[in-house]
Image (cartoon, rainbow, N blue to C red; front, side, top):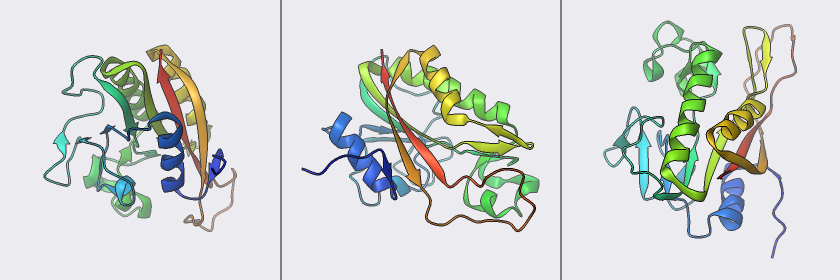
Length: 199
C-alpha cells in the first residue's frame, strides 16, 4: 500500500487519494463539470452540473442553486473559476483577448468570486448528508495588486456554512504562463484541494 501524500503533481493523483481516503464508493456529483476534464482518467460522477453546459448529459444548474433535495448526497466536487477581471462568463466580453480568459471562465471582481464560493458552500451543506464530503479546488490569487489567500477564506466560509476542514492537498504546477513584467508578488505555482466535511 502506497503512502498518500499531501502534495502531488497531477490532479488525477489527488482525486484518487481523496477517493481512497474519503469517498471509497466513488465521486457522486460534480457541480462545475465544464468540459469534463476532471474525469478523463477517473470514473465520472453520476450527477454532473454546470451553469453553462457544454455537453448534452450535463444538467443546467448553478452550484449555488441545485435541483437536489436536502441531505441526499454523500459527496460533491467543486472546481470553480479562480481568475478575476473576466466578464460575461465563457463569452468573456471585453477581456476576450486575455490568454487565461480564453481558456477559463471567471469573475470581474474578487467580491463576485467570494459571493459565488460562499453561496455554493451553503447550498452544498444543504444537499449533503451529515458527515458528507465536499472537495473544493481553489487557488490563491492577486487581484487589483492585492494578495487574496483564497484557500484560507474558503476554510472560514466553509466553517460558517457548517463544514469542518478534514484534509488539504496541494497540486503543484509544472508549467505556468508568465508575463515578462516587473514582479510585485511571487508567481503562484500551486493550488489547493480542500476536503471539507459537513458537520
